Structure formats: C-alpha cells, structure tokens
Image (tube, rainbow, N blue to C red; front, side, top):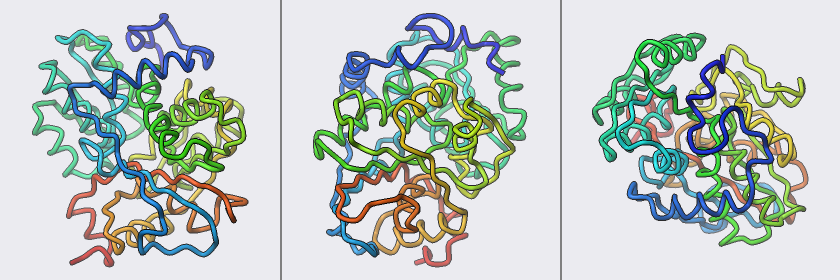
Length: 339
C-alpha cells in the first residue's frame, strides 16, 4: 500500500519519518512558511461559544476555531501550502481526496502552474469533483477500496509524484500552524477537540500544542462510527484500514495515516466516536446559529454537545470547526438548513 513512499518524502529524510522527526523547530519553520505562503492562508478567528446562540448544557469556557472561514473553505490549505513550498514548481502530482484536500491541492496547482490529478472516492459529492476540475486539475472517481491502487498506477505508469492528503511530514507540519494559532489566543487550554479522518490535522495540532509545553492539555480526536480507522488503530496498536462509510466523507479515508498514528499515540488522549445522526444534528444546529459547516467539519462540535468528551465542566476548551465546503445539493439532506 505504501510501496511508493520514497516518492512522497522529498524534503526530509527519505522513507517513512518517525514521530521524532516532528520537532518544535520544524513546526515553527512550517508556521512561517504557511503564514507567508502566496496561497493566502488565513489566521482564522476564534470566537467564544457564549457569544453565539449555540446550545450548551454545562458550564465551561469554550472557544471555537473557525476553519470553515479558511481559504478554500477548510484547514487543508495549511498543509498544502507547506507541501507545495517544498516541491518543484513544475511538478506533476497526484493525490487522493474526498474533496477538501483536493480543492486546496487544485488551488495550489493552478497558482504554481503545476499539473495535477485528484483520485476521489465515488461517495464524494459530484459538486466537489466539478469544483476541483474548475481549477484545471483532472479528477478520477473510483471505489474507496481502489484509491491507492489508482494512485500507484499514476505513479508507476505516468511518472507522477504522490502528495499524500494526510500521511506526509510536510503536510502535518503545515497543519500544526492551526495549533500554534490556538495557543496565541488561548495559551493554556485544558481540552482541545479536533476531527480525525486520516489523522493529519489531529496529529499536527496535537504535536504543536504538546511540543509548545502544554503538558496538561487533553487533546481528543473525533471520528464517525462508520469510519473509525484511528480509533481501531489505537486498539490494535498499529495503523489499520477498514471499509468506511459516513455522511462525513472527508473523515472516511480507507486507512489511518502511519505518521499521524505515531503522533496521535504520543500526544492524543483518546479517540471518541460520533454517529451520523449526531453529525447531521450538529450541521443543523450550527446552521441555525449562522455557521455553515460541512459534516466532516462539525465532528468536534458533535462530540462536545453529545457529552462524548469527559470532564469538561468548568474547563477551558477549544473546539475546531475544520471546514465549510458544503454545497446546496448536500444541504438538501438537512431539512433545518433550508431557507
């Protein structure tokens, strides 16, 4: 499955990096790269929960990080900015994505004038494929179980370079910029709650927070029940795959990332699960409060409001809303989101 790993790592040591490769100096360097990226990455706002109309059934201090307001609509542009800054500008790249990474990848490809292809699962909304193609990037839709097979074919037959959408050192370091922004507003959070698909965002945020000296901060990842690869990886004590199915397609890759797994094992308190029904209710609740957040983007919120995170009473909490790329075709599945 990872036979072409050597083509993925181009800037750091060849082969598969260890968790020890992720240092505070590395993350600070990536933070500056992301901050100064020509892709226009935004330092997104953090707002107090108490200044919204969102429901809350216990007493605590929660800040919400609004990555749904990020350039390209999700946190993915952070990792992409760091990846592309460290790759040849005239490269020919292939990746796999359910939409958000693909959108940021396509946006960067157009900016840098590089060729690109996104291999997407057939379960991803058609609207996302059309959007990615509008940037001049090729899209191939395949069954989820065939994603890596098609990527490997592109690498071997078409001499493309694989940019991984969540299991890549440059990517994880770029995503860590979000964790550093959290600490600029809230230097000592008690709890940070982050969505988890392949684990790139969770690993980056957790590493940034823990390596910055927040030893007592509890960091939780949140996965859908039908796409719980990191949860199962924690149980098996190794990164595993599964046949994933969830309304949160962006959190349903076929396997957990190897580097993210190592970092999550080191820095994450636990992985908790939310149901598709809880995710749907979260999308609707956020929409009624004026926040447009996609199903994948509201998993952390769903975990908090459904009491999946232990011991939150009186705590200083950060909840990350990771993306807002949801089209009208998808909103039609949420009756409360109709105007």
